[in-house]
Length: 344
Ligand code: A3P
Image (cartoon, rainbow, N blue to C red; front, side):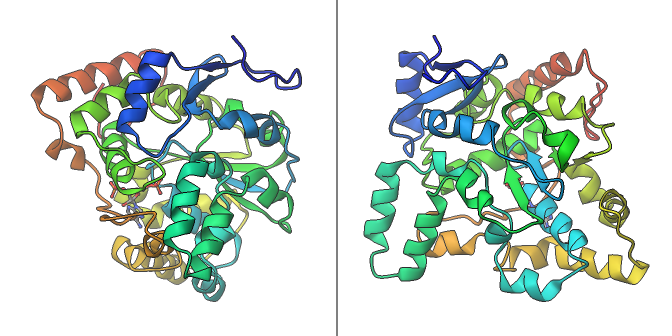
């Protein structure tokens, strides 16, 4: 049953079954209302997505907009900084002065900041005006934030192409980044435990079960990737893999530069790669989400965590490894989408 009582939204939105909702809410303690499935692929999102679905779908797109889109934990932040630096002619001074989260609003994040959690965060931070401002910004609908931005706008989203405005790709540019789902799952598991808007309290095996069975935010994973992959030859789409950035960042930079009609010398590319190098990135307060750590929204671990490819092996037992292989193989059957580290 379509629960969004608005004839203008063309996609169906259904509530997730009560039994599984209860199960998920016990494990993901940041969510306090429930979940919905959106569109024919059934993308899973917090219930509050119903408040933003139409605003996002019908938002005005400008030709100068540059989106960075991905399934979470695929190297989005890394790509955002790369794209922003290239588009802005390597403006290191502004990059250092203005946090990436301000340069690049996260379109749908407000629906993940449940009012119960927002209240809690505000109470805990009542003596810090800086932190209160951050919390307020996090809970302001992204569609509103970006509407007020001057051009060119830089927009981050984890939404699949089908939930974004239909005219997006014919109007503006999109850089999509994908990563091996096993590394994505490990990375997202850590973030789910560490970021209190998600507040995951279970173990990895349980998490993997939900991830693989499309019972996690923004899943189904493969549908998400395939939608973007299908558009990879569109002149306004650049499709990247985390693994290619990881293996040879200096080769990836010119691809991004070409896409954005920029040209840099070898020396400039070298300097940019140094700026984007994992250790520098991890310690760069402008990109590493430490402001959310200061406000106690991210706890224990860092948002920029290990930065490795293939780290999943430490988390998967034999049963899970086999399960993952057959899951990936089945999902790659009818597509030429391939991950560098997966032999299909
Ligand atoms: P890990 O948790 O495996 O370390 P996103 O930005 O989409 O949330 O992706 C986060 C993942 O990208 C994390 O993976 C993070 O450490 C990694 N990452 C961020 N910056 C990176 C960099 N400069 N080099 C390599 N990996 C990076």
